[in-house]
Image 1 (cartoon, rainbow, N blue to C red):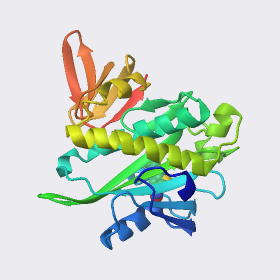
Image 2 (cartoon, rainbow, N blue to C red; image 1 turned 180 degrees about the vertical axis):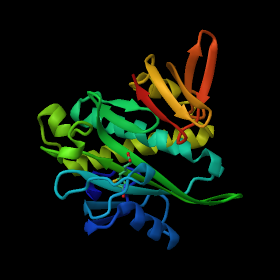
Image 3 (cartoon, rainbow, N blue to C red; image 1 turned 30 degrees about the vertical axis):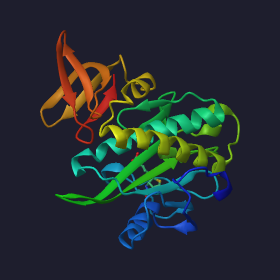
Image 4 (cartoon, protein in one colour; image 1 turned 135 degrees about the vertical axis):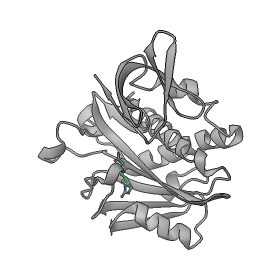
Length: 254
Ligand code: BTN
């Protein structure tokens, strides 16, 4: 893997054959002072974690389980934008390596034909004054040929989509390279303004009807795209646009 890495992201790699969760390990390493750009990789996770307390299916041999440590000098309230940057990087890495134009499902899933190829779980340690570290956990279904019954309808892999096996180290490197470029753009702007158009172009929800469930209720509208903060703009009636904040809602195509 080290031989494939070009930049700072993933230059320091800690690899485990078996681990509970790369996110748990990366948080521990970050607490111990690991530098920004350090990557934890595992072949198998015994306690892979998804969002909203769910588990992430993590069998050996076929997939990518990785967590990147970042130390951005931004406000904690801006950290959720990093997840969108990561989604863009995974989209690009897959496209560059396999030619597959998957899609980003706002805010941070990568999907193909309506099924999930990749999930991202971002965790942060911060105080009011600033961020200690952010851990971006990325799970990509790469060469898996079959999924357990319970996720068969909702999960897919690059192999199932393209019919070809993909070198995992090369994909990790491609994602790291894209991530570093997009991240630098994000940090220099302080928001996603430089990435809105590329994100929206690759977002599967754009232009589609979505159903939003959040604290303010349950409504249907047309997804227009993201704004500079990564919020989803949803037109609920002509000329009336609501902003959906990442992490607070579930958006489903209907
Ligand atoms: C989701 O629910 O969509 C997020 C899934 C995130 C899974 C990845 S796999 C690598 C890292 N370690 C974990 O325990 N979770 C993330």
